[in-house]
Image (cartoon, rainbow, N blue to C red; front, top):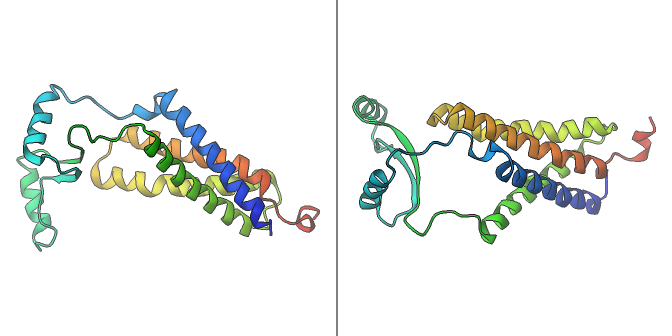
Length: 195
């Protein structure tokens, strides 16, 4: 089994590769804005949201039905026949998520946890002697990660297909680039490599 220090280093360097890739994907390619659309005459619904929700940031689903109500599904279906449905992440004025040191730090911390987990799992897979097989192992974790949330959001909340595919691609490539780094550092013992 690879040394814990080497596995830790692989996880940190893999996270740096992930971070660089996602920065490029969101700032230098259309991947970061794929699937988003402008709300026509946005000032009108924005004012209505502010008047209705006020300062309470949160995740909103509409039309709303109390999930504790045993007829919630039926009530929702009836409401959905006459009013629009949606999923809204709302922030009051001045509180929106922007690219700050805190958000970038949080994103890197999330990628560090993912990359460290991938490095740890790869370190357990001592039978993978070929570099390409080790990269593929980490990339396979990326496939699972890309499908898990993105797929469910498309299925249950109707997230647009182009948004979903762009997000899945970005996630998969994050693990692929991390795998390229991690696989170079997390290797099986020499006895396995020499077989």
